Image 1 (tube, rainbow, N blue to C red):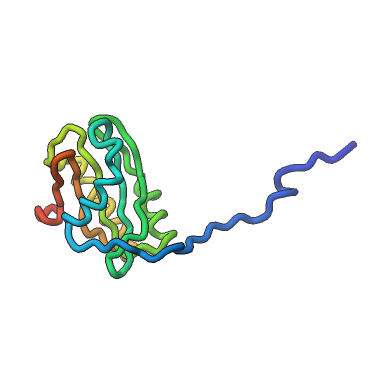
Image 2 (cartoon, rainbow, N blue to C red):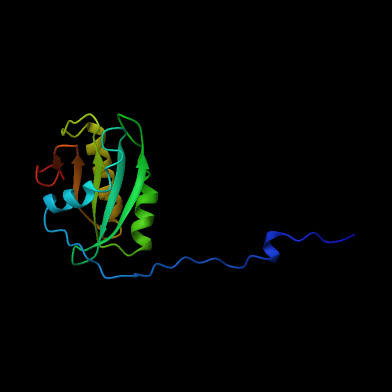
Length: 151
């Protein structure tokens, strides 16, 4: 009887390594500068569906990565806290800015928005990663939960 080869015969150990390929170019100086930077990442979905992204920063508040966390419908999206924290840990993030859009155009944070902010703040806190802000974007404007004292 002839032996059938399996994937274990061909695939060894796989590893993932994060290496910076270019110099960090954008520094977040305020909630306004963060919202302007993030707005470009929401152009396609701004009026159609809600998306949640996390801006990863280094010690100098320079942008390391923009993590697309989830895509939802017109009224909400689901955020997996474990995946959000794992991504930040893999690239040695020192601080994050949470961001999502409201296709309805309203800037008022919902109860769910406040709850996920608190949940992520606690989760990131276990690993000494600071949550600097949670920004809500609309086509016309933005709301900074930190500026409003909601963080």
